[in-house]
Image 1 (tube, rainbow, N blue to C red):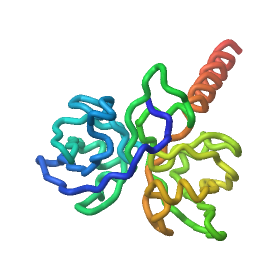
Image 2: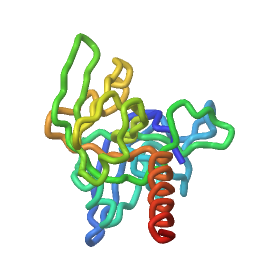
Image 3: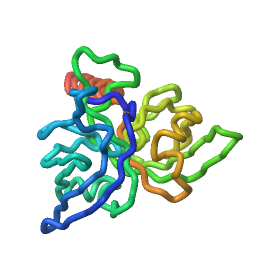
Length: 210
């Protein structure tokens, strides 16, 4: 479980094919254990990479390594990553941690695309198009994770939604470098999924009792 509060940006140093899967090597020195911060990432930890939960399978003093399977590569923007690309990184949530964003599972629902970017001084408004199957989970003032970043939905129009990005988010995550046409990982609100699921079950039960 994650919060959608990105801890740092990492740089892909290598992508190694493993059949249809691949191994990603990511430079993330700020996340490794140090004397000052012994809580650094360790072998077997779960890390959200652009919002997608992967397991640390190897590490050294500067890099973390992850394995991404065919389904992950197909259903997320990790499939297009290459050397020198930047990614958002977040360690999994501890039970005694503050929940500053919202509940994020690290299970990507689909890939959206930036359809519009409106810059206003140091702020930006993004419009993002999503597969129609995901639009039913969107609501104004609801939660959304875009490339692992916890955001608030501003408006929803058809299969698109907008988010307002503050200067800090633009500077400290990969979203600052996103342009029209770029693919972004989307995880819709966990609570919305359960609410809609419960409503569907109740509807079926009512129909079957008639």
